[in-house]
Image (cartoon, rainbow, N blue to C red; front, side, top):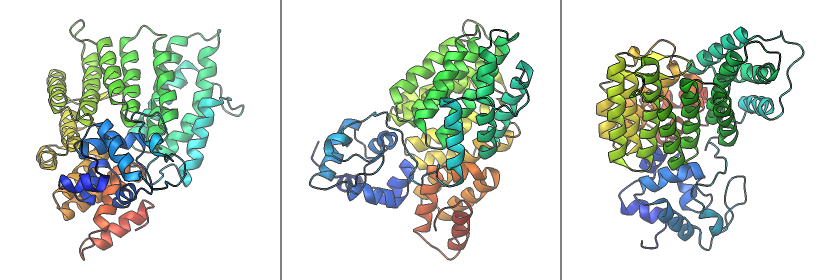
Length: 426
């Protein structure tokens, strides 16, 4: 391809810095720093950036080299220092959120959870655990996660994971099967939270432990739900081919062609949706919509939206993913059209995380269509539904930053108040 720089390529395809920022989920300041060679895109951002610029990941590497030629890149954590370092698509380097979501009060939480995974030491001050208490704790963790009570979730997991590991490993444990099942769900919750805190490396560690523990059981559903979590971590890290492979492998464990059980239908559907998102991020529109179609059929067979430790799936969840897929493909008009057909109230109670992400996607779509009032309304609604989800979302941060660059009398006050509430500098 022609030796262009990032800014030249962006302008050549008719994108503003604001539009590019919304497509990727960062703020316009970050786009400017990339284009001025003051920083380099994190590995997790590169597949989205390549797709938005309508180039392959390898062609993006050429654009980055051209952008940085003759420039000195600041040597800071996670930022490549030479053009050679830039040409590393798919690197396993841990991505950090552009607004550093793990800073502030979340830094202590991240440190506690990391220690629980890497240096587990059961607390001597807590009550002894049992298989039943671990199962109850796994359900409590799932509930906290869905209600986006992330601080409470992190402290609970940091306390429980070392105890659960010690109990499950005890040769005298009477019900090791139940204990291991609870441990899988606790690992899954830890992986999900670490991903939100921007620590994809430890999120992958937790997800891998969930898979390994699940493989000790004879439960295809447990194995599949662990692989669902691993696929989502790989997705967040930009490892799209591995995310697809892991999702398909997980779906094979609950192949309803062999055993048509509603419980398995839901797990398989969730894995298909994850695969669809991965395909969309690869700009493979045909595969993304084919997988969405398969998930739609599974949701119709299921007949309702279900939410449990194993899966969240059903017709409403598929409809929400139609919005997400459209945004992954950069089709704001289709995202808004699909979003207008979604009624989040049809989701089971307590799924604040799913409702919050839907509203963030809708806000991003409205920004791309320059519908700033509608975008602001969606973000304010998202804060009411899931405040900590908004606080930890790169996409929400980018959307707020773009909106604040277009101050209007009827928006600026509301937006600055929102930015201040979620600890962003307005």
